[in-house]
Image 1 (cartoon, one colour):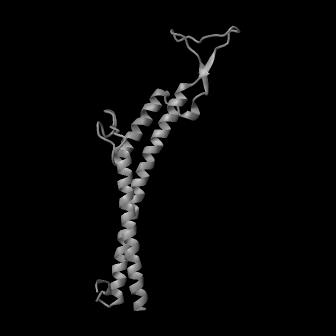
Image 2 (cartoon, one colour; image 1 turned 90 degrees about the horizontal axis):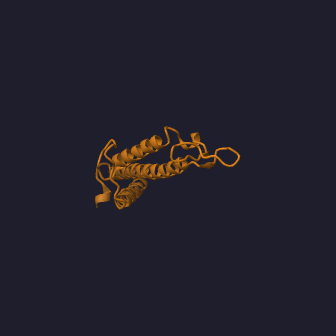
Image 3 (spheres, rainbow, N blue to C red; image 1 turned 90 degrees about the vertical axis):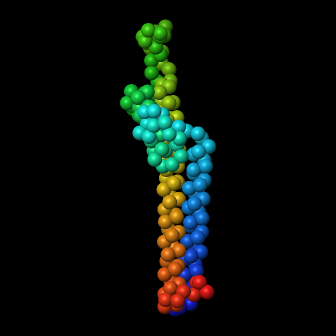
Length: 163
């Protein structure tokens, strides 16, 4: 039983170290990739005029992009917008074809919405990556703690892991 506890202790400690290394790398990798984009939140963001680096500024930027996209689209989401809309002249009147029907053109607001959705998704994915990396760090700490406890139990108070 002592040998099983001692082997389990070492395995738990090794796994914990690997998890901590992986979680740290995940946070570093995400930070580096976000930082290289040099994104600064606009003045109307919940965290204004701040470089986007961590989860809070990522969320602030995603929210303001969504707010602006909804504003441009008159409060409509992609699915609520028509695919084509009437072409308008300089006075805002529909342009008519030779049959007197409105000339239809692609709704460019849908393109804006697609771009906004892509950016929001990327920002939210970075938030999830930060959270997942933090969870991995937590599991690494728990694993190391478990290894220390097993090591202590295997020697009834005298830890063989330090020998």
